Amino acid sequence: METWFVKSIVATVTIVPAFIAIPFFKFKFGIDPLVFLVWYFGAIAVAIAVYLGMGGRGDELVPPMPQLAVIIAIGIVFGALANGSLFQAIGLAPNPGLPPVIYASSSLVVFFLSAVLAGSFPALFKPANFELSRMTGIILVIAGLYLLAGGRIGNPFRSMA
Image (cartoon, rainbow, N blue to C red; front, side):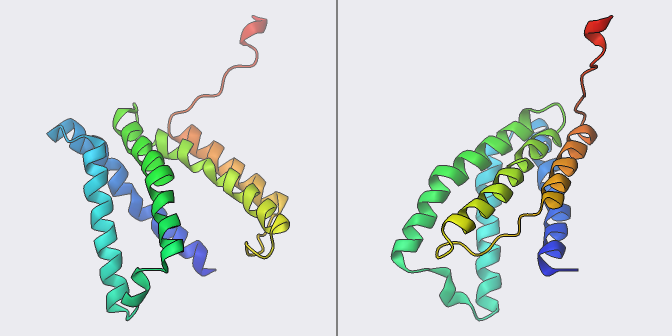
């Protein structure tokens, strides 16, 4: 199995406790999902920094200034909005599994854009594999997760009755 796939499986399994904890902490202790998000991501940042430091990669923690500024801007604009919205949606949804399914649909956009950007700007983006069978697989997985999370498919024959 490829490393990226194994790491994806590990990420999928280990994110579950956080997604379950968000509505639990809101319901049981009245902790707002955004407050949970602040401490959750703070803990992640500390843990990853320690991991890199212990691996002798502590000097990588601060990239060169122009790139660092862009990373911070992306985090402030897109990361905060995406994750803040996701954590709030998890706290509000009738089932905490629904928002992550919708959020995961972004993989279709990333999959398609990666191929387009790599083809259009090969000096800036590494080559991206774009196979119709993989895109179809992503669509089917997202559709399956939606149904497992409680989504419904409308009855196409309803208007005929």
